[in-house]
Structure formats: C-alpha cells, structure tokens
Amino acid sequence: MTRTPASIRRACLCLATAVGAVLLGAGPAAAHVEVEADRAQALAEDVTLTFNAESESDKAGITSLRVVLPKGIVPADVTYTDGPEGWTFATAADGYTVKGPAVAVGADAEYSVRVRQLPDVRELAFKTLQGYGDGRVDRWIELGASSEHGHGHGNSAPVLKLEAPAPGATVKSPTPPAAPTPTPSAAARPAPEASPASTPATGAAVESGGLSATGWTAIAVAAVLVAAAGAFLLRRRSRAS
Image (cartoon, rainbow, N blue to C red; front, side, top):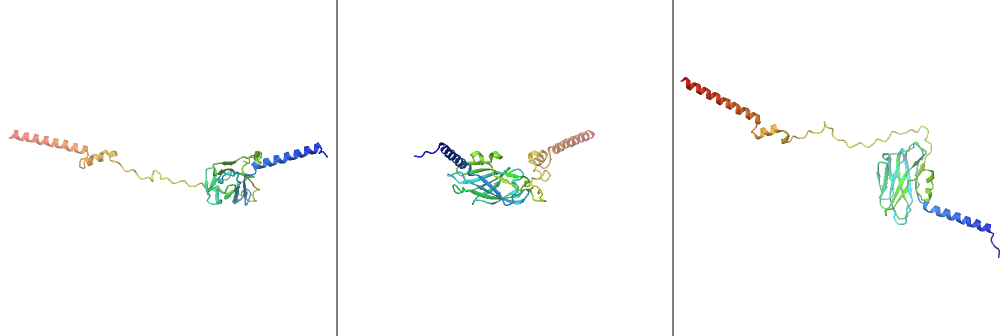
C-alpha cells in the first residue's frame, strides 16, 4: 500500500483550510448596498443615482432605506424617480428616506433618485440604514479603506467614485431654501378691539346716560350755586320791601 508523503498531506490540509476561510468570510459580507450613476463625474448635473440594497434576512422583507447625504448634496437637490411599488420619498435635515410595503423576503430593494449637481470631489459615500418588516436594521455606515470589506460584517457604506469634472464645468448656485410661511408684521396686524374694561371713561358715559361722572359733578355744583344765588336775591328783596 502506497503511503501519501507527509508534505503532500500538509499541503492539502492548508489548501482546504484556506478555501474554508474564504467561504466563511464571504458569507456575512456578501450582501451590501450598491450605488451607480448614469454620469459618475464631478460637477455633472441632473445625475440619476440608482441604489440596490441586497437583503440579509430570510425572515422579513426590506421596508425602508434611510440615507445620510454626503457633503456637497443637500436634500432639496434630490428628487425621487423610481422604486418598489407603493414606496414613498421624504426628506430630512441630513438626507432622505424611501419606504413602503415590504418587498418579498430575500429580494433586493432598488430605487433611483435624481441629483441636481454632484459636488467636486473624488468619491461620495451614502451612509444607509436598511430596515426590515420585523424591526431589524442593517447599518451600512462604515467609511474608509478599513471598511472596504466590512471586516467580515458587511457594513461598509455605499461609495460612488467620480471622474474629474468636464472642462468648463462650474458649480451651480445653491438651491434656495424653501420660503418660510409669511407672518403678518406688527404694522399689518389689525388693532385689537378695545374691551369695555379698558375704556373706563366710555363705560361711565354709557352707564350715566351719555355723560361722564365728572360732567354730572359739574352740573350738580352749578345747580347749587344757582340755588344759592337765587336765595340771596330773594332775601335782599324781602329786606328792601
């Protein structure tokens, strides 16, 4: 019986171990979120970005994708163009969310947005939180070269690499923010109606038949003076007679 040399056995064992390590490492890092552009070029305008989120769950379907926009792109510059049936788009202070009914379990979720203009950078990272119908959340948010393979955890953020700007390309003026709801100025506001309590003189006049309390006091004093003068004249006449 021919025996296999020890060196061959050791080589086969090392090869099997290496293959096993590759297969085990590929498992958890296989799923991820990818982004592509119809024009991956700095300062390109009206660019359509397509995101594909792969499922990592065999129990629930994907229901939402929350994206934090990279520096140089503001939510007002992003328009939703296409996505899973029934999904909607809403902006936030730092990005946007697309969400809706769960896609089929194990199926990918793909959607597209249009960006007004890409910034003048070499690459763009779109940090993404991927939600499922059972409450699970996959966080594709790691940045840098160390996260290129997700450390075996599959959590590197989707990155779009850009070519140099076209000759003559310039930065468009920033998208103006939404106009705030106008509020009436102090001059334009109608004057508040005076309440009876705030106008005591008017109230007293109404209660006293049209004259204020001061007016009635003056009349009373005048009446007393007239009566006194009349009495004085009557006494003088009686003495003279």
